[in-house]
Structure formats: C-alpha cells, structure tokens
Image (cartoon, rainbow, N blue to C red; front, side, top):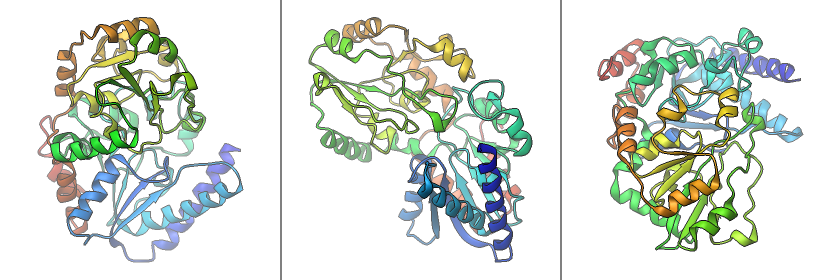
Length: 404
C-alpha cells in the first residue's frame, strides 16, 4: 500500500510539474514543509524577515501534515499538485525537512531549491545515514526515488558537520554553507524581542515567577515519523516528590507525536503541557535548564549557556534504532542519567556546570549573531530573484565560510 501511495504521489507531482513547465518562471519564493500544518522555525524567520522588508517579494507557503482517512487523501492529492506546480514555476523553493515532491522531478532551468533543515548540528542520524537502521527509508525505496536530491544549497550551523550532512543527503560538499547562519537562532540575540516572547509564554502558561523551570523536551521514538510515539520513561511523580514545590516542568513532546499527553491530576501545577506551543525556541529562555534525551534542541539551547541534562535510559536501544553522528556518552554537553531518582537528586542539589555547554556552542556554530535571517534574504533570496545563477549564488555565500 505504501508503495502504491508513493507511485500515485509521484505521478501527480510529475504531471503538475510538466504542465506548469510551459508557464514562465516567476519571481516568487515558496516556503514549504511536509510535516506540519504551518511553517515554523527557519521558514517562519525567513518569511518574517521578508515581511519586514516591505512585502515586495511574493511568498507562497505550502504546509501539509500527512494524515489518514478520505479527507486526508484528498488533501494529499491537492498538495501534490500544488507542489509540482510551484516547483516548476517558482524562482526559489525553500524546504526545512524531507520534501518528497522535490525528489521526483528534474529541476527546471532558472529555479533554485534550498534546504534549510529543521535542526542545528549533527546529532542523531537521518537520510542515507540510517539505511542500515530500523528508522527511515530503506534501500529498496531509495533505489526507486533519490531522496534528498535536487538541493542547490543547504544550510548547516558549522562546516565541521557538513560531511555528516553530505553523507545524509548524498550531496557534494560544495552544496553546504555555514556563513549565513541559522535563521531561527536570531531569537537569542535580540534581547528586547526575546523578553517580549518570554513574557508571552509566561502569561500563556501561568508560570510561577520564583520556581526553577525545567524544560523537558524528549525526542520521539519509532521507525518513522508517521509512527512516532512518546515512551513515558521519566517518572514525573518521583520527580515531584524529590524536587518539592519550588520547581515546574514544561513538558514539550516532539511535534511528530500525535498522541496527546495528559497531565495527571496529582501533577497539576508541577507539570505543564506546552506541546501545543508552535516554537520550541520560545520556550527555552523561560527555562533554567533543559532535560532531554536525543533532541537536537541541545544545539540552540547551548547558545543560552544554561545547564543541559540528559535522561536516556534507553540509549542503547535508540542507538540500534537510529544512531548518532558522535559518541553519545562522551559527546553530549552534560551529564547522562538512566534513572529518574539520579536525575532528580542532581537537579535538587543545584550544582550545575556550564563550561561544557559553552564549549559545545562554540563548536556547533560558525556564525550566530542575530543576523542570519537578514543574510539569507540578502544573499539567497534577493540574488536568486535578481536572476543570478545557482552557481553564482552558491559561490557568493560559500566563499565566505570559515572552513571553506
């Protein structure tokens, strides 16, 4: 059934692409994601930067989260046709994740495709790096469809991780650029904007002003994003008993997890479900420390220089399922815990160290200064819409990378 669905989607995208290719290429930017019903992260920051420039650049947003049932199938057909049309006619097409329609067409001359990705650094494996794992695509699928193909430019937070992305995308090294920075990190360098967003989050979730706030952001489990799940490994009741009343936990499940988390009545006031918040980065400044397992949120959180703790009782199983680009036990910027009791006692003691976090941030980002969105618009959007060739745009931005 899955193969049949892929075949149908491919036919729809290619049909729309071929028909639209008789039309002229338009000076339009398309911002597209296939895992959410609205854009966020890098795509949202690029959209907002363009809007601040006066709205002179036409922007189209394609945001579609796969679903099940008849209505979802009709929506999927419409989105496949739309994607094919815009891939053929938009001067610049920007995606932030795996985007199937981009991989089944032969790019049209005069169009540019950019992958800004949804994560910084290189932590857990993805793309072609997981063909030997239970997660992600398999060899049979990638023989039929060359996933992560047709990218003209890809953002990375540091050129040190470009080899990992080149492996994951099977793209040449010259496709990757770090000098532009990562747009959504701009939040951490505008103190006034960050203060406004922080106050909004505090009001929305009625956060107590004096409590130590723990952001708990585990990644998902499962062998595909469509079967993502949350395994309740952390004993929240024991955490509350150990920490007492002067702590609050912001529970942020991964967006791929479809099953809602329900806060038990006994934990109300201690655990606050913030999974509905659209931007994880906005939750970071209100927290005093991050607890996670394998989430790439550690990269952006490291820019705050605050403690990062790792609760990973299943790290060996996760290694088998997904795998990492570095040794988990020695590479993460904080202590690793396998029991809730050990984690809780460490937090209660409050003797945190951040030197590893700060060193991690320095290694993870070649450029992080609050100007990444502006640089992307200036160097990629405006150059592309002005008719500069793909090779010219790539040479202009890659030539300034520290490690290029």
